[in-house]
Image (cartoon, rainbow, N blue to C red):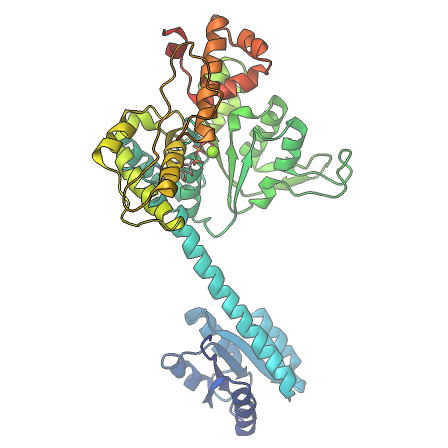
Length: 461
Ligand SMILES: Nc1ncnc2c1ncn2[C@@H]1O[C@H](COP(=O)(O)OP(=O)(O)OP(=O)(O)O)[C@@H](O)[C@H]1O
Ligand SMILES: [Mg+2]
């Protein structure tokens, strides 16, 4: 049962007070009465009030002044003003000053109850929204980024430093290192936190579609554009837009992106008028953008524009001291989620194995390994942790998913071996390797970045 709502009636007319009290009580509300606005303000400190019904014209402080005071000091309290037929303009003024609704007196019982119920429902909704925001903040604040090695602490410091500005941020790091979490942490710690956080995966869409996804399009801009569409830049207005996999963005879109980053202005696809937005951009990539510029795949001017404030996230193998902490974090999270023993722990032997592995899929892979083991666990011991072998030369790929390995980890391993073999066979010439593999050069490049394949991996037997 939800608690009974408290309604405070403020009116200098005794007959009005009495009639409202009777009707509201019958409907199940707790009713308080005040004969003046001043008295009402005093009572707000003493009794829990959800909704105020106030007359406007009263001796002393008016209902509109009461409204202003309540909006300032008791933001959660709803206010409905009551006026007579002769002074409807008061009701208009009150609505403009933030009243939640108005009543023209005399009011029928049914109408009264509808208005009261509506005002209270909105209040409940607002409270829920606020609670939800707190939850979202907890989830995406720092608290969810685990790690205390100097490398991670540096990342936290950078997040902290840049969050309260609207500066562009470039986040670079291999797959699964938390680039998305970091973007969210920046957004939710910024003054934009109550505005939208919107993410676009630039690698997921072909050229034309990406442009319309980002900037929107006008009706009829191309076949299939049956109505006007607001792009992500507009959807994120006032908030933050995360351009994920920025390294995959095609050349034509790079030009348009540069313009919006410089001026905040763009035109929708097929449109002619200029749209201006206030959208903070965070770009992320698992490629080395500098190298992409040198290879002629990424515009240099765009690179400089993006690279004002950059955060480099280290791969997990370079901060192995964080592994025990991450393991503990994931154990707790997944034991709770899957209804397993909350005392689950990893013994020393297991930790050593985890520390010895090279983690090509980084934190994401570790997370999958732990989740699977938690599900398989019985009692308080962790079971089913099997790690893939480190890639070895020309060993043929396994045809069956190795026991204890997640599909994703297996695929990443397999892909890594295939790419390394192809690159070796092509003498390190990427264009040749891409042709042999039947994929585009940029696709190959993307995969090399994602798997963090280095020159030493190719020439090292
Ligand atoms: N430092 C961390 N602490 C806790 N969880 C993390 C951390 N880093 C990554 N994760 C988890 O690992 C998974 C992958 O993280 P995220 O999606 O942010 O990676 P990414 O860098 O964007 O990877 P990709 O380049 O493949 O998109 C997520 O489930 C995230 O919660
Ligand atoms: Mg990502």
